[in-house]
Image (cartoon, rainbow, N blue to C red; front, side):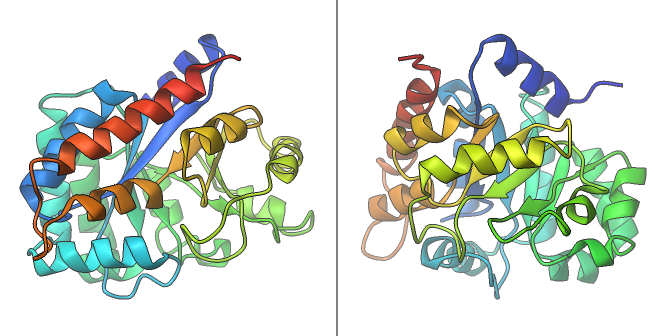
Length: 274
């Protein structure tokens, strides 16, 4: 059985390019603006959307995404509303994969079975839960796979040959390679090392490998795309959004436009074969 993720990676492979994976935070800076971005990202060139679940203690995220989550929580965003937003998106887009990214606590509070049922019904394609290691697969990973949702695992520069098979054992959809050590949005990856790392992971899996953390500019995206099947851009989009807000942290007429303009430039860079 094919999935939206499988179909998307097949399409971009036929176009001989990498997929552009874009991250935005649900409810940031308010629900209406986040929905407007969610609706418009595919037309701007996003192939896959990571939709952040706001959480008050996002330990793997850098300052930009931490602030985005706090803005969303302050504006009243909840996990229930985030799933409702995806269900709304599915009424206008049945093609673009949506991955929920975040931490286990909100899922645990909701209840795993309830969360998975509601996520599947809403049209979620997969999960990235950054604080659940493979040793905890019985908590959420295996139930998610049983429910028909992909569970996407992170591999890092410190994931060695002994650890990698364990990381990949129940991974599905794609593998997310974290190109730098540390938190999101705080450094630029060494392009010369990324291709080798992706090739090493590919020796262990047939899944697509996408690369994220530290991809800030169209030039970064183009360089990374030459050695990966997908490029994730998150903090750069959140930074762009933040800079467009007014002095009270509210959206302005430039907010959606500026983020979409950046996405278009990233998509063009990845599609450029030169």
